[in-house]
Each structure stands twice: as structure tokens, then as C-alpha cells.
Amino acid sequence: MESPTILRLCGIRKTYPGVVALEDVDFDLRRGEVHILLGENGAGKSTLVKILSGACRRTGGRIYLDEVETDIRNPKHAQDLSIRVIYQELNLVPYLSVADNLFLGREPALLPGILDQAAIHESARRLLAGLGLSIDPRTPVKTLGIAEQQMVEIAKALSSDARIIIMDEPTSALTESEIRRLFATIRTLKQKGVSIIYISHRLEETFEIGDRVSVLRDGRLVATRQIAQVTQSELIRLMVDRDLTEQFPKQRIPPGEEVLRVEDLSRDGAFADITFSLHRGEVLGIAGLMGSGRTELARVLFGVDRADRGAILVRGQRRDIRSVRAAIKLKMGFVTEDRKSEGLVLNLSVKDNICLPSVPAFSRLGFMRGRKEQQAALGYVRQLGIKTPSLRQRVVLLSGGNQQKVVLGKWLCSNAEILILDEPTRGIDVGAKVEIYEWMNRLTAQGAAILMISSELPEILGMSDRILVMRRGRIAGEFLAPEATQERILEAALGSYAQA
Image (cartoon, rainbow, N blue to C red):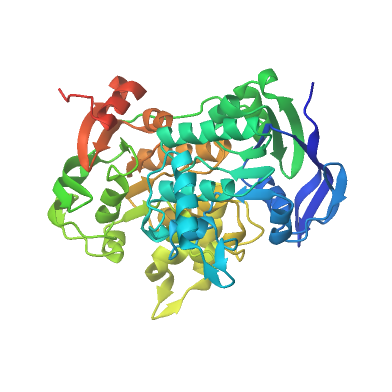
């Protein structure tokens, strides 16, 4: 017997000036089910979530809760209706403690105006422990890593008596053990009758925790299926409206000359004694658990942070990379793991973001050459397939996959020959991933060298020529691609692999 429907959307439509984001979308959610929502970046998933969360108003259509027509007026009203959202882009106050974030706006009080700090901390401790977290509730959120912040966001949503929880890419920054804990929590919530709308680009998660799946494409609902009655290849075809013949279209070419060498590089508290080389035409993958020192290494290589010891050689010459500007002059580029806060200037246009690292190339006698900028930016928008109404569109209004393409475009525009890619496909759909992999192939074929950091082992295995594994700030293993397996990489990352 089917569970009762608690949420029903009928003919939902949302338009912006010149753009139809959603067109005639029907969707329903049953009590105690996980309904997966899939679609490429820009398919309309985020717009649908914003309507349900009260962040934006629909242009047309109807919303029913428990078969009663409802108008979700604003985020506070959505919360009053027991709808909670866990956003992919974290929604925490960085300078407040974990406990303060968990109960912000609904803190227990001893007297009017006097908070019950003991109760807040104890409740926070129980919530975190329920997710298997040992975070001190008094810890300022800004001192936590992205994965820990993601778990705090999840705990925040679970801290209230939500009937409907919308999870937007909740595992994008989590380790395998954290994902397992999250899935266990989801199963517990289902048993309690909580309903979950789950958005993810990791299709394997669909089959692990989903009951039903709906696919959006170009703002329209194209299919709703029972999980047991659909295959992964069918879902991909529904999402992208074409067959993807290969998920990792790696093209292997003979490596060329060495362009980057790192010798005994160390940064106290982050990593120690790192030695490796990188060659033209090569993709060197770096795997490892969260906290293994991968991102910290990338930041030092690109001049964001300083090393305490060791040497960096670029094209055979020792370089003291003291700043990002120095790295750019050496024809290096860095696609950061957090595109929102580190990779883009969100309120600038697509054109300005693409051209930003290359300002000297577009200026003459102190004046910007606007037409040259325009032509260059337009070229990369076309080459990368960036979906934007115009070059003047603010990047903050683009989907996640198109934002990631803008980040890649700015380093292509700068003619970077050494590219550091930190989680280059995090939070983007399968079609956009393949497009980025194909661009990696083009770049290496042209002689670029790529250092790719990724938490997704299939991506590391599918796109790397060599693989380094980091553990606790040190290199714990090195493999050529043909000899590498997920098991061997995990053994090295966990410390159970003895290097030959």
C-alpha cells in the first residue's frame, strides 16, 4: 500500500526576464520516502528548491500540502510548514559557534533575553553525537573544514521537527565514512515518517537510498520512475538527452618534459617532505582522505600559502612562489575546491571573471581594451558551452556547472600551462563532468600538465596517468594508472599499504 502524499506540485512555472526556468512541472512526495531529483546543471532543480523553501515565488501552478492548497510566502513560512533545506552552498554564520548555528533563532531561554547556554550546548552535543561527530559545540564554525561544516548543516536541519527535508548535494564534501553515517540517518528519518527530496549528481547514491526518482531537463519534468524499475544508463540518457558512450573519456599520450618538480616540500601542521614531478601532457592524480593535506599542498604550489621548507622547480628553475600573481606569471592556474568563495567574484559578469587573471594582456597604456576582452570571453563561452544569456550576466546567477566552466575558462584565457584542479567536478552533473574531462584531454594534448585532486576514486582512476596517495600530510603511495585499483588507493589512504 502506498504511503499518503504529503506534498504535490501541479503545473509549476517560474520565469525570469528572458528565461523560462520551470515549465509545467508536476511533482509529488509521499510520507517517509526519499524522492531523488536529478537533472543537469541548469535543468531547474535549484529553482524548484527555492520555490519550496520560500526563497522565490512561483510564476504559476499550485502547491498542495496534505492536499490543502498552500502559498509558500517566504523562508520563515516554509519553516513554519516544517520544510527544511540543506543547501549545497553552506548557510552557516562563520563567526558563531557550532551550537549557536544549530539553534539560531530558536534558542532555549532561562528568562526573556537570557539564553540557556547549558541547554544549547547539551542539545548540540547530542545532535552531533547522533551523526557520529565529535565536534566541540563551542567551536567557531569558521575553524572547521568544509566536510565538518557540511555535517553541521545537516545537524541543523535535523534539530527541528521537520516533516519535509530537502537535501541539495549533501555528500559533495563528505568522506565515505561520513556518507555512511548520513545514509544511516536518512534511513532512520524515513522510519519516523520524514519525507526527503534528495538532489545529487552521484548516480550511485540514487540506487542506494532512493525510492523514486524524477528527472528534470531544460526546466521540464521528463520522467518519474520507481528506483527498482530504472537503470543508471537510462537515467543518464533522460538527463542529457543523448547517450554518453564513456563516463571517463581519457586519452593517454606519452608524457613530455618535466615542468614541475617538488622536493621535500613542507608546511608545518599541514604536510611534510612531499616530493614528486609533473610532466607535459600528464594528469597526475592526488587522492587521500579529507585532512590528508591535498588542498594545503595545492595552496602552497599556487602561492596562496608559504612553505616552511623544501623547493619548487618550474621548468627546471627553482622558484620562490610568494604570491598568486607570481604563480600566474609562471603560467600556472588553480581551480579551487570552493568556487564560490575562492574561484569566482560572484557579482562580476561572466566576461569579467573569465578575463580577470589576464588583465595585463587586455590593457594598453593603462586602459582596458574592451573589444579584445569581449572577443576572448565570447570565445571561451562558446568553446566551453557556458549557458548564459549574455557576457554581462552576473556569475552568481549561473548554475553550478556553468560557474565551474567559467572558472576553467579564466585559466584557459590566461594560457596556463600547469593547471592545479582541486575537486574539478564537485557538485556538477554527469554531462558537464564529461565536458570537463574532454577539455582536460585537449589541454594535455596541447602540452599542458594537470595536477588533479579528487575525492572521487572513479574519477582519479579514470582520468589520471599516475596517482599519488596522501595520508596525514605525507605521500603514502604512488601508482601508475594501469596498476591502480580503488582497494589499493584506499589501503594507502588508510595506512595499510606498504610501498614496495
